[in-house]
Length: 295
Image 1 (cartoon, rainbow, N blue to C red):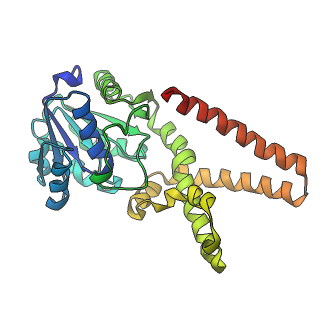
Image 2: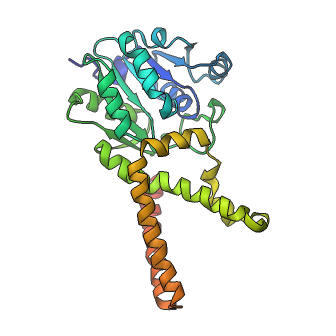
Image 3: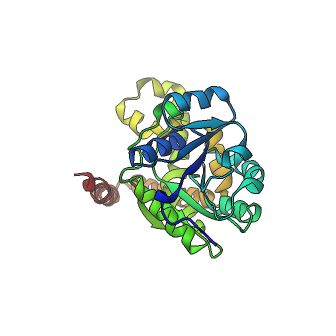
């Protein structure tokens, strides 16, 4: 059923939401030799005009159906809270054999929505490129944003195998490394390494606000809480759509903090040192695996 073989065969890609990630996809496509049309779809003409000015897309529209019509690949780059409405709006306008993906930070709910709302004539494959920052807007988009970044691809039993192969090839073409995981495993993993850290950063800022502690904070506090500068509305959507996994991760963190509290309460320097050293070594090993590939 699926007709797409590689990115080289595409002549129209629709990007819904041309902010940091959507804009970076558009720039990366251009940098890696895509010669078709990059269509930017959004709600505000001012934002779409800016996307054109930054050369992130070739044409723009506020009409979702018109924007996806004829596109062989459609990429949802809006906040997750908008996905259901967008999927309903674009479903009837999709061409047979088109592939639809997204860049959302949670996958279980997104995949359920897509498989319920999209016609069987198209293939949906969830994607999550582990790239970006707390900043938003196409002005922060970069053509190299996905270089060596890990992109998690989350098919289900219903996902056409050709669609999975195509999406893996797509992300690799614009510089990313890829890994295939189930939507459920994705959400468990991301709750621990992305979603919970954001909540912890926000909690640390709230704690520091009390009794003026934040007024004496230094670079370490800035580094630790950088991600707390992310968009609150976007993160509310993420937490709600991955609620169960985040709740479990919170419970696990509370248990780890209780373990540390017990060691500190006993004033056991050797045990505290071991607790810290295990994390230090694990982080150093991860840094080596993650960043040494860049030379």
